[in-house]
Length: 252
Image 1: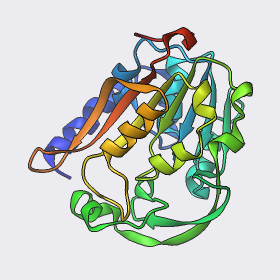
Image 2: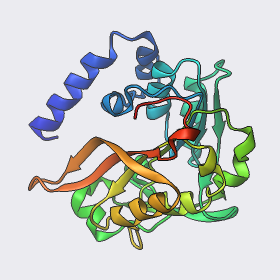
Image 3: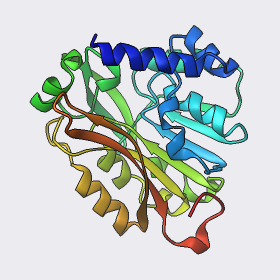
């Protein structure tokens, strides 16, 4: 581990320890994604849809920031989903869906990575291996997939709604399966890549254009990830439904 990585982990641990909910996460081996806290400041969603929930890193943050929100978490990997289920056992506001989001319903091949949070419905590419060598391929698994439209009919979603997407190159496919749902979504918080990491991966400009066509404008920048040379490889971007008359909270 590089010295800088070790320091970042130590500083994050110091941010997690004071909060009882985050300490519960640590007891289950899950570090809440507090690095996203600033990007979400001022939001007040009634519904959070956590697509690519893994073991519950973002769900933990959402549960702390938005204690009155209902959180729907999507995670197709059984081991990660099991951890998520144990972590939120007894919390009726957190609901786990053991599926991957896609542009169709059925089954799909999940390309497993040695670091499981890098697994993807897209094959792991050379760019990802250069960027994160610990995400080398570790086999495949067939998993259930569903559309967000099928899981969450727009007229049943309590507003405001925050849709979070972190699915290793599958963000655009997930959005294509959510065209009706997006009418009930107030903010989208998505990880976008500026260079191809997975084979066939849409890049940031394609997702920005797709969301713009659906009525969303860029509202903020969250965590940016850089390579060893300092070039930005990925960033989490916050989008806001630009039809202000439809908004029910959140920052301008």
